[in-house]
Structures are given as structure tokens and as C-alpha cells.
Image (cartoon, rainbow, N blue to C red; front, side, top):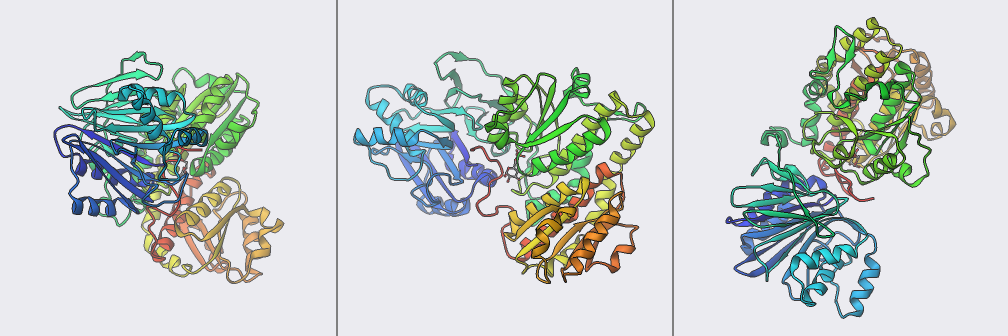
Length: 610
Ligand code: G6P
């Protein structure tokens, strides 16, 4: 969601805040703002639009100060405009606040504050907080206690930073439900909603937990609980190289991340394949292997692309480990009364490890007594820390809003969990070894697909003006159809739907005509002939077909309008290959439409609100 940064030290905070906001812009990019305190005097600049617009305005107006906070917004309450942009401020313009999250009881608080004479500038829920804090200050409290007392009245989720020109030696930060980290420097300290914003400055990171509040000075920090007990925080060393979060010569992060997949997939399996034993070794699951393998049931829960990965995981685990699996949207799971028993295992998949719905579903599963596993990309993220055991996918930072390399790495990790559980149960050594060989060969096969990028770009050119797309797949490739459609709609704004190929005749077939392209995922597997029949049904209605097929398949060429060929592998791993042309197809269509693929409208990379 929104991105938050803060700085306190001896340097001018403003360029540091702008730099940090640029690295966080994937979290939200409809408006931005910074506030700083200079010699006891505070100032503020806000813009509608991107951080680059803020940077221009800041240069022009020469904002500076040794202490400052900055924010890039993804609107929840109130339109994306300058007034609703953060930081928000009190009427004296002495107190400034940035907020990531949602204040659920804001309207009750707002009514109470208005009755006390407070005026509101914006339509946001966040502004309530700044006036509430102000009301405690006006009663004679210091900044720290005013923030603490205010948060005790708040329901909802927040990561906040507050500065006050009457106490210009500190930033107050607090967290509940939304991520917040403190970066420790030498005589200076940093704050951010995401480590990525800080790695240019420090690798020493403190993760704030829910219900914690900290006072950050330039040379120290003190953490306390919201009920005012002292808390001793550990400082973590975070190892992310700056190159990992740059575009590395590519036009977009998304393309870079698609192209990185031979390596990111390799990193997901590195050191985890025990060929001689035909099994995987997952350090984060040690001690839980048997518990997982003999679960009565596995429930996978996630959102978005990670949910699609979960659907593939269902096919994997049921086919090889013979364990019943259910896959649930985290947002649905948390608001049902799901039947979870102590011998159930729940796997929560999340690239960011911060998705609010997934985190809440995880907490509920824990309360119900299931074994709770996390499959995350971001090391030290909330979901990773909340889980009882888990596996990092090690895909490296993913910045493009549309998830690509995280998906293929999630699938690799799910295949490793499957292998582990299956070998503990009925899978033979020989079959285990075969799976390992196939997993190990994936990076080279992905590299082969990436070589036909130009061919895919060429096909994309022909479909730039399409208004609708249908994606079809069966079995393991049904979730890939969903993922292909999601990629296209996220970045090209073309309406696209994914369907199990056989379901087409129960509805979507009514839409097919010469203007409705259909992407069919048709590798040579046990349902290949059936998929061919579905292609015939589309062709009979003059539909255009783009097929994803295997390299040795000549039969399909004459049936369809365009074919993209991928190498063969076992069924379980096929989605890791078939999804790649779909990522590239969506990417090229969006670029040819002149759209900003890394920051598509209305979306955010990390959804830390409900
Ligand atoms: C957002 C992103 C998606 C992502 C989903 C789940 O909607 O735009 O790309 O798949 O959140 O995120 P997670 O970090 O939990 O995998």
C-alpha cells in the first residue's frame, strides 16, 4: 500500500526521503508528500501524482531540514489529490503525520474531534490521527504519550511516523498491522515501511512489531509497548545489494524480473535437492516434515498471484503426496468460520509477506490450532515472522507490481514441499529422483523460452486493440490460465478471463467471435486431446487462438493462429514453463499500448489494507 520514509540526523533529510520514496513507489503512486523541520520551523510539500513530481516541486521550493518524513499514497479514503496526500498536519502546522493502513473507527473519532472545534482539510481517515494527537498535546502531554494515548483509541491498521516542531529531536513511529522498520545509521536513523527504501543507507534493521511504538532520535531509539512497557529490540543485518533493486538496464522492472527467472528459480531450489535420496531438504520445515506429510488435510491460503500458485500446489500435493488439499482466498478464509482441526496444515503464500488479508487469515488459523507454514519472498516480513515454520522462495526483490518471478519461485517451493511430503509417504526413490532431475532442468528450459521473446512481442503487436481475452487451460494449467488473464488485465487494462478449458462450453463460448482472442495452454499431457477439441470449438466460431504448446508438437500449428512453443517437463512443473510466455505476452501488449507496466493504475504491490 502506501510507502513511508523518515530520516533524522545531520544531513538534509529531503533528498534522502525522495530517494526512499522512489524505492517505495511500487507500494502506491497516486500522490506524495514530505514534511521536514528546519531550525524548529516545519514545512510541507505535497503533490498529486508521482514522486518525480514531488522531487521537482521540492527542488523548486528548496525544502530542507535535518528531520523529515515522506509518503507515497495508494488512496483508500478520499480521491488521490494534493489535499488528501500525506503528511497531514494540525491547524498550527506544528505536527505532521504519515500513515499506512486504515483507521476503521475514523468517522466516530472525526465527529468527536469536530465537536471539539477541530477542522478537517482532507477526506482521509488518516487526518483524524493528527488532530487526535494534537488534542492530547493541547492537554499538556508530550509527543510520545500523545501518540500513545491516541493509538489506544484507534481501531484498524497503521504504520505511522509523527514529527512535531516543538520537539524537533525525535520521530515517533508505531505499528499495528502495517509494516514498519527502523534503519540504524551512524549518528543518524531512518524509518521505512519496507527495507528496500533503506538499503542504500544501512543494512542494520529493526523490525517493529504490532502494538509497539518507538521514539527515534538521531543517535538512538527506544521502543515501548503501546501500554508503555519497555521493549528490547534486536538489530538485524539485512543483505540486499543495491543492484538487486535497480532496473539493471531493462526498460521496466517487470521485464527485468521476467528475464531473471532462470536465476530466481535456481535460487529457490539451491541447496534444497538431495538427489541421492530423491527428496528435498527444507531447513525451515525441519522438525515438521512428518507432521506435514501426515496432515489430515492441507489448506493453502493466499491472495492474487500467490493464490494462483496455491491452486497449482493443490494439484501437486494431491497427485504426489495423496493429501486432500483445499485452496482458499485469504480474504474469504478470515471472514468465514473455517473448519480447521489440529492435524491440519495451513500454508500461507505471500510474495511480500505483508498482505493484510493473508496475515489475518494466518493469525486465525493459528488460533484454531493448525500447523501454520509461510511461503514468503521477503525475508523478515510479517507473515514470515508470524508463521510456525516456513520456506523462503529466495526470488530476490520483486518491484514490478505485476508478480512474475515470485510466482515461478512459489511453484518451485511448492514442488519441493510436495516432494518432501510425497517421499515421506508413497513416492518411490526412483520417482523422487526423476522429479529432482526435472526441477533441476527448469532454469535452462526457462532460458530457452526467454530466447523467443521477440516472437512473443510480434504476436503481442497483433492484439493491442483487443477489448477482451479468454485464457483456457486444464488440470495444472487451469491456474496458469487464471494467472495469464490476471497479468493481462493488471497491466494492459484489457478485460481477460481465465477458465478451465472444459467450462468454456458452459458460458464463455457465447462470447467467442473473430474479435475475441483465446489463449489456450495446450502442452502434450494426458488432457492434450481434450484441449485440442476445445481449440476446434473456438475456431469453429471464428475465434483467434494463441496456443502455448510443446516444442515437439507439430500437430497444433495448423489448428491455431499463433503458437508459442515451450520445452517439455513433467505435468507438475509445466506451469513454471507455460506461464512465462503469458507474462511476456501481457508485458508486450501493455508496453505497446503505451502503459506504465511497473505502476499500473489503481494497483499496489503490497496490499496492507483489507
Ligand atoms: C497485490 C499485488 C499482486 C499480488 C497480491 C498478493 O494485489 O498486486 O501482484 O499477487 O497482492 O500479494 P502477496 O505479496 O501476498 O503475494
